[in-house]
Length: 197
Length: 177
Image 1 (cartoon, helix red, strand yellow):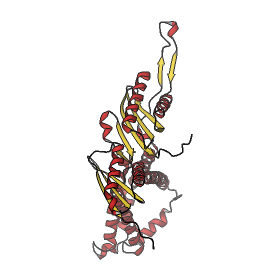
Image 2 (cartoon, rainbow over the protein chains, first blue to last red; image 1 turned 90 degrees about the vertical axis):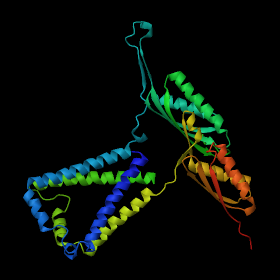
Image 3 (cartoon, rainbow over the protein chains, first blue to last red; image 1 turned 180 degrees about the vertical axis):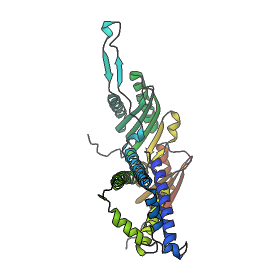
Image 4 (cartoon, rainbow over the protein chains, first blue to last red; image 1 turned 180 degrees about the horizontal axis):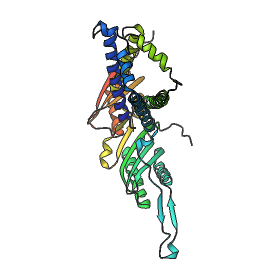
């Protein structure tokens, strides 16, 4: 779940809590009259409804429990999903088992992780880039590149941007992965800080 | 706040799973004539049938619910510090961002290195077309222009929007007794 979606969810929950608390307070403080303030939280009328409802009452309560259970499951799953639900790039599978030319038969699998590591290595060769972390998502024809770069604060950023574009062009030339959406986040680090290898 | 939201989502989600699951099991057991297993349903029912809305306990509980809602609403709707700022170079095919904390630290380092400021604290606020840089520094008031120029130079160096606004607030250094 994205940060924005989480925020909208909690604003909604906050409004519900405020409304519930406000209505409860209005009852407790006698805004609906003293008889309402002195009424029990569960009245005999509600108990009678439950009893008259027979199996329907149990079914309704079980259904509400089931809905709560399902909502909880969806919430837990959405919080544990990484990369805001985007799917990572699949491995390349170049299958030529049925090629008419026997010398060209075989199968080649290129792991997507090796591509992102290769791009990280290429980016880290740019002068001033200390560390690169790359995530590749989507499909090879419509790939998304998410990268985080730790860059020395004394470098020429225009030059770094050009070299990053060169790295992406090299990725495209070698693998035919065409990044349609590139998102790069730079973290500036003090240029003379000690590097940990 | 982002991490808090995520953790809260996880905790509330697990609570809903647990609560919903218990509710279903207890209701099914009650429907076939069994007693409540985990939830003390009978004592809760008896208590709720004899407690009125005006009792102090109920008042405290509903006030606490409203207060939690109010605090959560305030925390979620206030303006958050953006963890990254988009650079105008984004137009060249890729979206470029810079970590706001690291940029603030970088500008602060530059100001301290290039001017007579002895302390500096920067806060960057992104606006639609430009950023707003608010810097608080401990320095002689005569170096205000110098500090402003240093901030501008540091921001230009990373490709910040050209018409970004720089606001410098200076506190003069305390004189030693």
